[in-house]
Length: 139
Figure: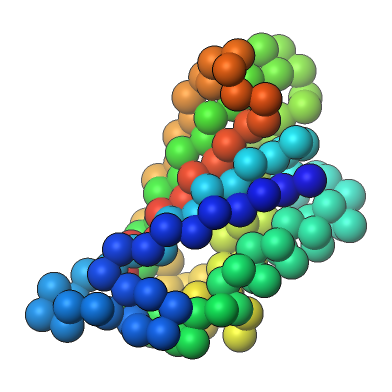
């Protein structure tokens, strides 16, 4: 099960920029995972993740045509992250999300628009019942 929350800055679902003179905007995704999805996950899990993300992003009536920078912050259970294989390597858990951002149901035309990706993880505390990944696409 994946739950998603979308937050925007200087844009909304209808407008690429709300304040044209500012010419910078961002779309933030907050994903709550019962089980982290990685490149090694079953195909159906990766499809489910892509569908959840693209269902939300398809509501945007525009695509980003320029270069973007993406930041991933992962809040993960430290024992699972470091001592088991329940949570994949950062590059493997980042890739399925990057792939879901592109195409007609995403917000990017192609992943070649990605100018930089910053990915890091932090240990989540026991008050959180799920792992959380936040992504910010800035353009």
